[in-house]
Length: 163
Image 1 (tube, helix red, strand yellow):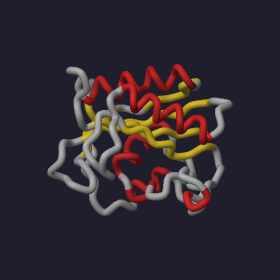
Image 2: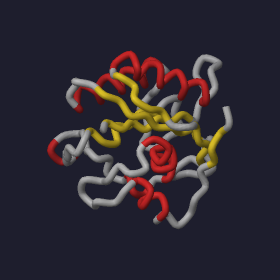
Image 3: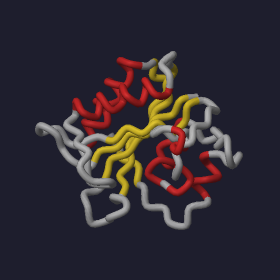
């Protein structure tokens, strides 16, 4: 199972974050076969909760693209939505993260791609949407499911958006 996290906290060309996330699903579907997509969630910005709130979601896809080519394609989609990489963890128009690629493991020390995502178990803004589409997916290093990782978080602030 290939899992991608989607998020937006800034508008782009008059399009709000909800529409950006929904449009990102369409764009992802042009490079990979979209299997499932989560509900949208409103989550506080991290690590600075005073920054604009995010709209977050997740999807699962199938593709023959390698993890590196898929990640490059996701970066191209981000750029198409005006994503700029000026500072780490800044507000952004679109953020696409490759969370898991089957049961592959990649250490970021060996390259710039870390699979599964390094801080997955700490991030409700990723786990809440993933729980919609892959609650039983297990982390290949810890053996914990998405459901277990989400339930272990001390604070839960993600809110499902009705669309």
